[in-house]
Image (tube, rainbow, N blue to C red; front, side, top):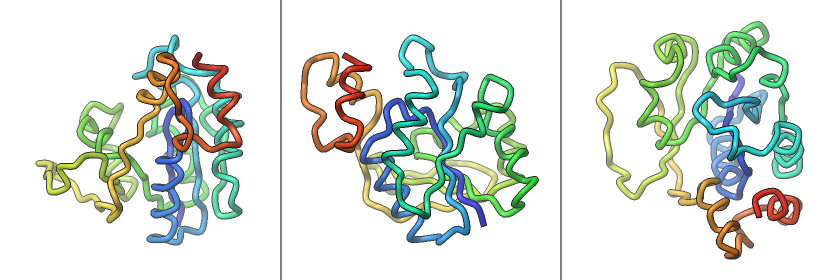
Length: 184
């Protein structure tokens, strides 16, 4: 079984790490791929650090042997669509679990070829809001990851940096200086 955790990771933060650890512990996948998106179609290019930086940051944040940071989306055609990544990975493993946040899940119906995604993978959703009992009217199955709500977002981190506020404890110490320099 392969667990896929993708995103812009702009920057990767401790919340990403916590959720990945909980998902790993819950599912014990054979492979756990962290996949930074090369050119996320829904993100403004002005607000995103280049792929090489985000990839390097992910390598240092997700350093345990059971995480594998992958540059798949740097090799696939742009923009970075999840369905392309999934179809590529299915050449190696047909049993794929896709880990996404509840914030992304709320807009999942807007994802490129989302109907195909839910046919090919098991969708695992981690909570992002205090409305833990929120339900979504969807006609496909998904797994809700039992985890504490981690209210940290890359957007909030970038905003704090712009305002000169601390991000200590929100970002791994291995990358904090580079992240501060990038978004300041």
